[in-house]
Image 1 (cartoon, rainbow, N blue to C red):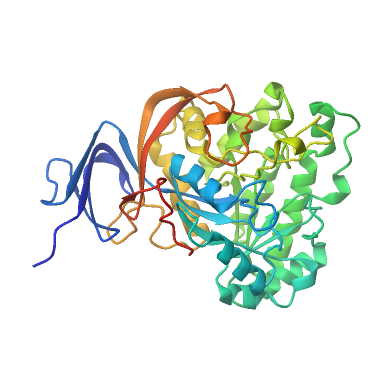
Image 2 (image 1 turned 90 degrees about the horizontal axis):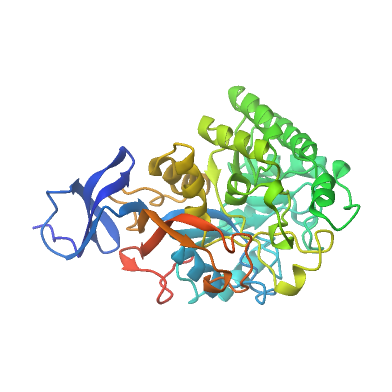
Length: 431
């Protein structure tokens, strides 16, 4: 006799691979065992009645700078993953830089895993890095378990993670292609970047033009075309990148791209202070509209946070001097939903952008969808409730965010990781 479930969740708005509908989701031993009709739940187990609160799969955020070890005063595994759980994220993938040492060899990966052990409130996977000093040795990192390799075409902001030139990019792609690895790229052309001419946001924005992104994307496209490798463009902020990306995909180039909540919800016209500074920058409202069209068309496949925090003393005094990074790990789902709903998108679209496709990008099987056999990573999300963001209420280490004072729609009530409520104690696994 097949044992019954130990948990059953019922929602009239369950977001499933086939669409949104009333459903009951049964869980046993951390896995989804069955998805039935709302009025036909399986017998047994603890019951959670959500009513009209939506049930989503746990989100997957493939772009998070945790910074531990080495810069743990900026962020750390305990605080970042607690914020993730509060924001409906059940799996994150940690970036290889801003920690010390950066994740550019198996020893550094082991150090990072040791630092993370026992601290994580959600599941954590890791990207490796591709830098001039480790080209030719990426396979060892791949075999040690990283999900792919991040590189920069322009300076990263930290000296221990230098950029690759065009030849280095092609070498990294060719090397990764030999084992079907993935190379993820911060794409800005350094020849088109400049130091800001002054302390204001318009001067900072002018120093990192959209053409720098487009030119770098074209470089990655041609390198991916020539090597046959898989490439992914990180944090697209410039809508001018959409045309070369769409053309490359029509040609069969193996390239994907993401954008971030701050590019979809904030505009240059409303920037107030250095807490809005990031690289590439938040651009004008018309550019934001075009990014939404690129997302709807599938040219942009994922929406992920690029949570890049720092201490408060690094976010002053002005746009020329401040650290470039947005802290938003806990707020991505309501921020994106607020704007998506206004534009006529549904919860199924948000789940596709923030759970299903990021899981596929990083090869995280069993994640990103409410389906039998998958991990029971689930989120109770009220899509109609509103709240006003207070930075002091957020769980990431340094209470800085451009969303402070902003009213957002959508509240995460509960996050489950493999069927257990996440956030109260460190239940996360290192993937």
